[in-house]
Length: 130
Image (cartoon, rainbow, N blue to C red; front, side):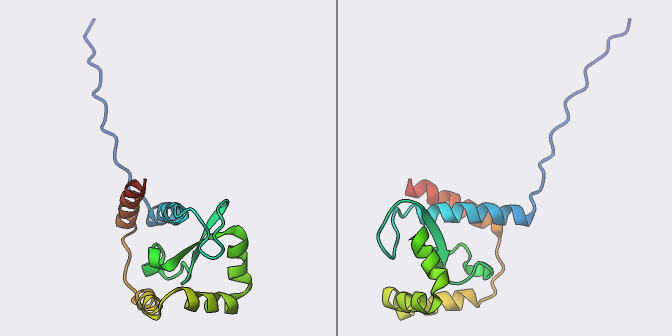
C-alpha cells in the first residue's frame, strides 16, 4: 500500500468587494455615527432617530460628510421632506452661511469617492465616539 499524502489546503482567495458593497456599508456606518448624537437636532427628542441629508445622497462627495447630516426624530424627518420650504428656513436659522456655502461647494466639487477608505474612516470615527 502506498502512502497517500494529504493535499495541502489551498489558501482562500480574498474576494474583491464590489464598490456598491462598500457604499452600502458606508451608508450604514454613517447613519450609525449621525444617530449617535443621541437627540433630534430640531426638537431635542430622543427615541427613534434618523439621518437626514441636507444635500441629497446622490452627491457622492458629501454623502458621508457629517456637515451634510442632521440627526432627526422620525416625525421631524417626515416634516423635513413634507415641508421643504420650512426646512430650508430652519437650515438658515440653524447653520451659518459659511457652513452652508462650504457644504454647497463640497457637494458640487464632483470629487471621486473611495468608498473603501470612507468605510475605514467611519469605523475609526465610531470607535473614537464610543
